[in-house]
Length: 408
Image (cartoon, rainbow, N blue to C red; front, top):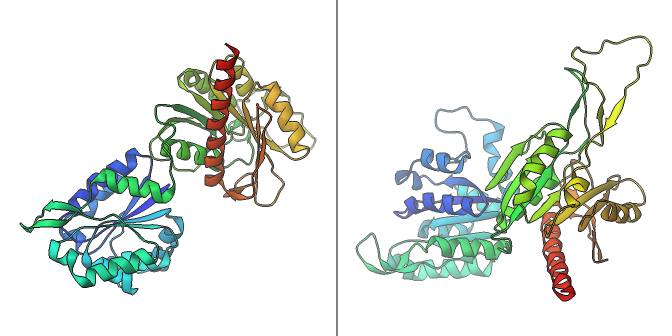
């Protein structure tokens, strides 16, 4: 999940650098937006180095830079891709602007443009915090659904003692997780995920592949990391960014993916095979480019290794989740695959359905479980589908373990 962290101009701005690291440890991708005042305390370069993301400091192009349409509407783009807006520290000034709908810089404009949930962690002098105007603004924001992380009491930078110190990192991160409804039920687990297509080379120029974008597998990897798991992502060729906190192994062919899975499967407690692995590869990879001829050519293919079947036959107490991209008889084919592969859960969909399948941001799937439960899901984002897959995997593992104990 992507968090936009707004940093405003207070002494506590330096603590936001530590907060970036803490959020990243929990699997969040963090992009920082700084007000002019914040830049008096911490440099944008600090946050860029920590987050690995562009730090936004102005609504328009930097002074002296070339103005363009992209810079003029960047607040809209950031608003659309963020899952949560977190402001820490939040000064009395920014609280007043949020409450009154003032949009005079990037952060305030982003606040009005975003429909994502908002968490603010105020930090200021005790008298400023207790002032009737600040408290009125706080109540106004609360009434609009903004989650307020109240400041701590203690010794303040101004030399006074009282409420106004920025809340602790754990308290802020807990608020973020609560608002996003992110569970931590995979801590101590290792989740192996495969994602993306494979490419089977025919000659130095051409290869066989499929339409997989990797979006579904990457969503599963991100969701597992957010829920506390160590995540190993074996990825075919894709342009997607590696989710925060995820260990990525890049492969190209089905044979390479097979080897990478064999090397990592033993370390996993849950293995989720979302990659669209090519069933066949050219029997021979030619050293020279095939020249165009007047007549047809024959292409001989040989089967690739069946990765799921190979590892699931000796899975022990690991939970194995497979995917079935179908164009007909979805339920029948998914159930056959569940048995044939010795999987515990199959995520099946009709890739011809509108809003489902390859390269979409949404999906429509049915989960077929080993214990006989079929769970059809309506069209939802792939991030939501990923959470439901993990929910079902955890439920199924509990059921299977209970059955094993009763059989002893």
